[in-house]
Image (cartoon, rainbow, N blue to C red; front, side):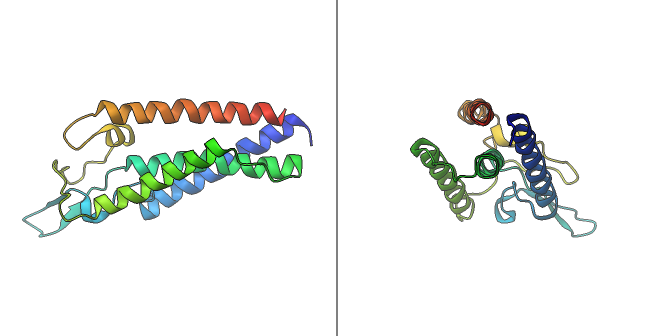
Length: 165
């Protein structure tokens, strides 16, 4: 299979997986915090409690790497007719990302972990501000994680596409 066709195939897999992730996030809150730890507000007139689920940095990070690695793996299998050798660094990165997501769920479920800043009903959360926010404002350590994952994710895509050529 030609290199240009393999690159197109990668971006096709990427787009399909991205569409599935967006759909799942809209229907099942795939990339958002658990409802038990989300800020809620109640309307005294109706008695209805509305919950605004904020985006979870750990879930977005896991989704980002899934979005990058699955199309790369599938494209290499189809174009090179072989299962790629997973680099130890990649496996460590996936383990850390998966562990972070699991630990985040455990911490979110802790009875001691209460949201500190309620979000008014009807206000939609913003992906970027949610993932860099600590609940009390932006955190430089969270911004650093976002920048690190974005840069290394784009580098991983570039290296994958270069190896398909």
